[in-house]
Every structure is written in structure tokens, then in C-alpha cells.
Image (cartoon, rainbow, N blue to C red; front, side):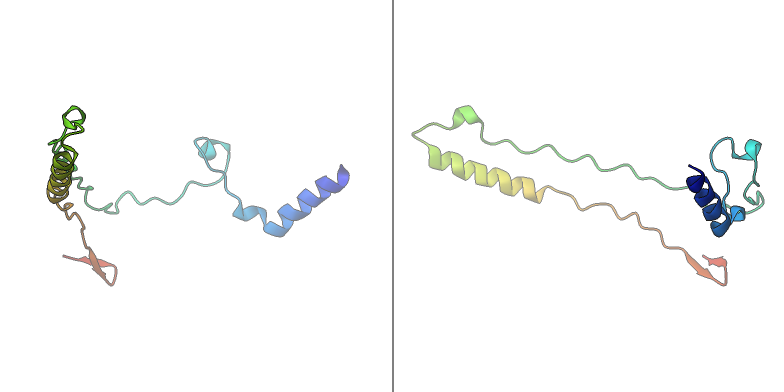
Length: 109
């Protein structure tokens, strides 16, 4: 048991106790220093969120009760038309990329 205690103390000395800082909601009350936060700094513009486009419901041309043994080819053709129509109705995704350019630590337009 004492070997384990000495090993832990030796490990703490080797790592350096000055690099260990408390974290969590009670870190400022237990000990350590609070991180340097400049309240005067600009935090940047607010994040712009764009709601997603609601997809169109799939086109239904063929129902299971319409497929009978005497017309399987017609039902297959309707199904192919349905799949083609669903593939064409998908809108392209919106472009929401924002590009910021910094030069020398100053934001350029």
C-alpha cells in the first residue's frame, strides 16, 4: 500500500502540480484560478440558423390492393413512374456557408 502512495506522489511531482487545474461548477470555490475572460472582446455575430426545407411527401400511384395477378406489368410500370417522379422532386439543399476573412487579426468585410 505504501508503494502505491509513494508511486502516486512521485507521479504527481513528475507531472507537476502547477499544470493541474480544477474544472466543473465548483472550480472557483475550491481553488485554482478562473480563466482570463475579456468582457470587452467582441464575441462575433450571432449564429444564423435556417430551418430545413420540409420534403415533399412521396408520390403514390400504386397501392398494394391494385396489384392483381392479371395486371402485374401495369403495376410495375406505375411503380417505375412513381420512383422516377420521387427522384425528380428532391430539391437541392440550401447553401448556408459563411466565409470570414481575417488579415492580421482584423476581420476583413
